Length: 156
Image (spheres, rainbow, N blue to C red):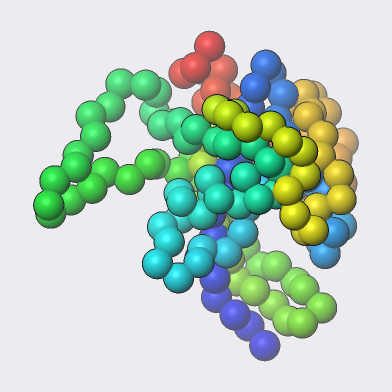
């Protein structure tokens, strides 16, 4: 049975490394993320899932750089811009999920307490040159490399 899901994810980068978790169900290294809850926006999901899965508060970054004006009035709110939007097929034992994944670029901004939930069994910081040798999906590697490129170009 195919299920369509909106997702929010976050690639955290700090000191030239990205934090990945080893996902128990998928048995792959992944950046934190998950399904958007009812009433939640994708960027809120990315922040919540990062905290739940890693114990780290995330500050989302604009992939176009620091200079942007935020709209916030009664008719429009300027939401954080995803680094990438991925449409992906995720095969679980209970069925197939089609994920519309809003992947955000972020950096740690607060609390650091370690693994936060039961979906992951390990957390580790990786340098960009280590990404291609990890046991993960090709789209995950592609988006992580994109995150390093954007972070290096805009936030050094």
